Structures are given as C-alpha cells and as structure tokens.
Image 1 (cartoon, rainbow, N blue to C red):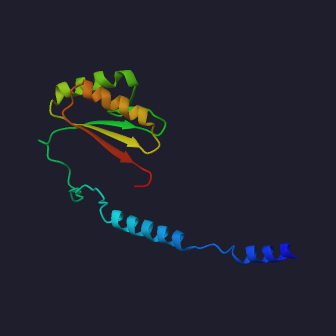
Image 2 (tube, rainbow, N blue to C red):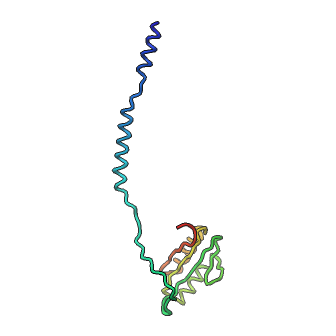
Length: 139
C-alpha cells in the first residue's frame, strides 16, 4: 500500500514549469527586434534615361557590343566569335574607337564563366569601361 501512495505523489509533482522557457523566448524576441532595427538595406540610386525614339547624334561615341547567348555563344558585330578571339576583336575595335566602352549583353541563361572570360578579355584589351547588361529572365 505504501507503494501506491508514493506513486500518486510522484504523479502529482510531475508538472513542468514553463516559466523559465517563456522568459528565454521573450528575451530572444526582444533581442531579435532590437537587432533588426539596426539592419539597413543597401541600394543604388540609378538614373535611368528616358526612352527616346530619336537616334543618337552622329558625333556620339560608338560602343563595342558583345552579346552572349543562352547557349554561351559570343557575338560581335553580327558574327559569331570564338572565346579566344574576343580580345583581339576588342583591340581592333578600340583602335578605331579609343574611348568606346565594352557593353556585354548576356542572356540570363548564359554561363557566368563565359561572361567572366569576355570581361577578362576586355580588361586585357585595356577597355576604359566594361558594362554588363542582363537580357531576359526575371528582374
């Protein structure tokens, strides 16, 4: 009979005290709220020119356009160019137009390795500006 009495007392005392757990949760909540107020999102102020149907003036500088398709083909001046020949083509065009910027127009499905190799070739050709223009896909 004494065993039954001990068992009943043990069952009555098995309640779990949730107060310390709630204290920890509230402290963590306060910590996350306070630290979230210090996080600042970084952004760029971009000045986008207005769309115009007028062609550029004839005395405007010409840019060197390099297009990378989704299957990683490189196109310059409406012809396909091998990856190893990109630098020599950019150097040839820079001889004609010394201040021309290199604009790399890459489709969203293009491989990043292809873009990097074209950008490296433009840097090796000492292009003054290299610009990436993504084409297609979500923006």
